[in-house]
Image (cartoon, rainbow, N blue to C red):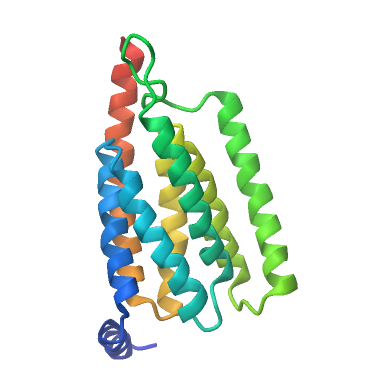
Length: 209
């Protein structure tokens, strides 16, 4: 595809973008910004965004991005779980889940969860769906599943998982014609790196006390 064709495709798809994609994009951007700032508003804004994204991926994509649609329903469930975790405090007033690094057990569990999810989602896609992007679709989903789990526990590693997931999601969404979502994932990639650097500093300060 030439540069001119890419530009034409970009403006054509922006023009045809549905309102669900616009609202989902804006609320998810707000959610990632709040996550970077360690603000619990990451979850209510995220819930709106992921439910609309699930609708877009399942009902508007042709063929549907099944794994991404299901993934956004998982995001919804984990958002409720994470919202609960983030507001929990100990008797002395400190947070039950402060920003911190994974323990070795949490790290290996997360990596194992990622590999299991990738294999399971891939075989599910090739067995019972008409997905034409099963490898990338399952890779985005499995890495994001792990990221969401670590984020609910306020683990620094969640940003590394998001960075990887976003790198894969950018070309996948462009290929599917979701230009607004493509731009969103580019922004997510930048915000994920910023979040990682900020949370890393906070975790270091927490460990020093």
